[in-house]
Length: 435
Image (cartoon, rainbow, N blue to C red; front, side):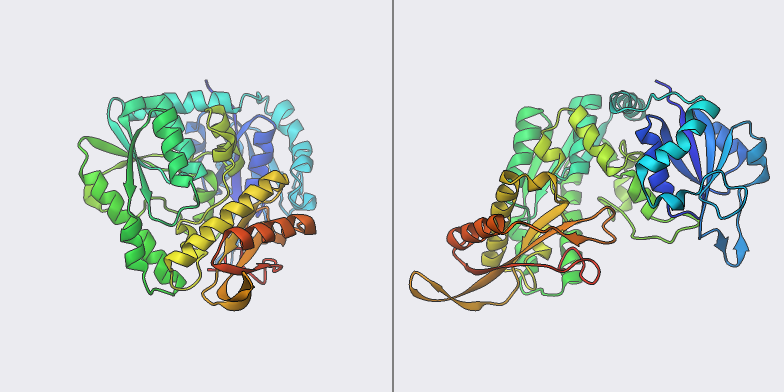
């Protein structure tokens, strides 16, 4: 169905995404566009009901103050100025310090009374629209998808399955650095429950052999990322008639990759770096969604709660939590201790409260006692942090009885470990991951 949209024009604000999320929370779709969009480009967008010009501290580029094109005011849409320091500003969003509820209150009269927008943005409508768009784009051709088991790729897979069924080919590569039971869970949900056309590749030995003796974190990342692309490419070349590549690109990926008034935070790619001669056209049905909306979409599509609310997980997996050169015994210690931590956090209800939690095993040993004899084993470090945007993070104050239970289980069940530590370092000065 046709949905109404409020367009945000970026005039150097830090609050663009907060504003877009607040408008969507009112039930009206919203997207962010550059300040120099033309009136013709604006009119070509579907369902535009109004414009919010969102200014801020980055409104000077190379010494020149930027502004929207004068023709925007003559385009026939209601206009609100927000976040600007100028006297003409209708509402100063910075005063609300990213408070979504306050921003909703500040803009709702403009959205509903001035723009006459309808609250028709919801997951049911989004899924129906995307299924129609995918069918229109793909037709009866095939889509290849790298299915990691992460939230984004899982939701893309579920949506594409609804849209094109057997014409979706999923490839799950187990690089041996997955958390306990994750590859098995991907197979159970997608192959057994959803009847997906799933190719499973166990490349554990291939990856671990390449990583043997490699201690530098960046080198590990490059080996893991490069080899993943090679494995995926090998599988792609075995298949006939693949014209499209599905990707789990989401809206923050696009925003973080840089706008005209914001420097690139980080370049984003999912199966980036594939050879050009594979000639895939991209299918990115989630590229309009924020992370919480991706999760809501997954639930709407019927995916299990634990898959949709899966812990954030780095691309190199446990490879960056097994510090230094990866060894199989330490990798297993990370995997087993992490499983215990996740199980106990779930029992205590912390899995719904804490943003990210995991264990780390460094590459040094310490003296301890096991079975009344001297031991020389690994320590396990527990990390549990809360954050809004991953730019800063605070430590979760886990209650002592819970920490003691986790410690007891790790020491009893993971035989190569004799110490458990809790990382108390916020970001900054620490980062969330150790590597």
